[in-house]
Image (cartoon, rainbow, N blue to C red):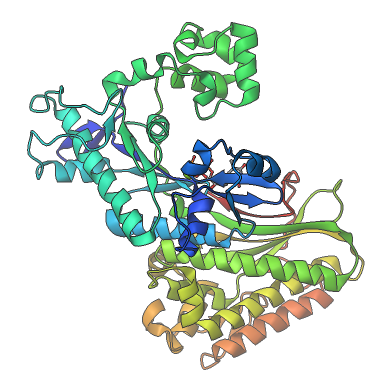
Length: 522
Ligand code: TTP
Ligand code: MG
């Protein structure tokens, strides 16, 4: 059942740690307010809903998604903290990713939502095992009890992997607690599915292992609703069609019948997860393929209003790009995509071109930052401000090119794609490519130490008009040249169509609760 991993001399089952930050938004708010006693009931709210609360509040009867009014009724002394600005939660999330990457080197770290993390520690466990005595015992809970002394660790190699993983998990949780003032719960097992379930077994600030030979008995009486990936519709169908509501009961349903009822993908997944089989690997989410932010609004023909929304989106996007660069050793995207929606009943349309140089430059610099994104703004405030302006201008120009004077919009989205690392660029760039152009212009700039000097003396080429550029041009001149090309493009759409690749892409409109959102594509 357990997936086998072969890594050098170390052949073993996978060791996967899941971390779930406790009462996340609430803890981040409390971190900003050290004077509030953490043992006092505290809740975080958005609009009129409690989105989360600390454990003393839960003990008093406050629940997630309760009306604020009802929460006050059940817990009169409840302290309520506004959680409508998501920026601090994103920062906390990337702080955790950075810390994990620092601690664990090349281990894959997958971030789910803002407060859940999976880490594949198989290789680290293999390397560390020799430093542990054969009698060292587990840390934390070991399902079904806290007492794990009954295991004969001397004879069982596989169990010893989990001993090491449990020590590692504790170290990680302690580091997050001491360095970031956030507690989280941990789960350890041989799959993402079981580790996630294990993390929820003892909350807050505890950790639990589910050992491979106990997976089936752990799952036996588990309500199917508790399994990640089984939503209320699937659950109701399972109850209605097959009269099953636990994992043990579901194991009696033949896979063919599940596939018939739910389709191949879901049917097979259901068949597997009730047996504790989950071979999905931990995807390194620091290797995202795209980052985008969007804003929905009531349909408008007012250009200044659209610009206002565009500015909000661009600012949010730049923050995300900077954060991403910081946690991923300076990765940056090369293609800027502006998407818009004319009416709710039409399809999304997009136009794209290269990102401005300064975005790349800023992302490259963020590579060296260790702490939160505010450090970036403090250190590089001039560059940050000019980059924001450039990004904004380029988006405006792209929209102008596409929309002309006849338009009405109800959504703008700005995203960045085609991510690369500085290392990849070094290895693959063609002397006349836009990246090479950036590199050479960067090499001349004060940031040469970050991006790297190049000895190539090939002529530079503009990515829009293909004209050769003077090697002595400053970054500002190059930017001005590209912006001028884009402006000309807006007057003469027929020019260089293939360079300004202006593809039109259709997507289903996304449904969101809020009018704005950011997304990361992996
Ligand atoms: P959860 O992981 O569900 O909960 P939590 O971290 O607050 O609490 P715990 O893990 O200790 O049970 O959600 C993570 C954050 O997501 C939460 O702090 C607030 C936010 N959130 C919403 O914005 N909307 C929602 O409907 C829910 C449930 C959570
Ligand atoms: Mg949580």
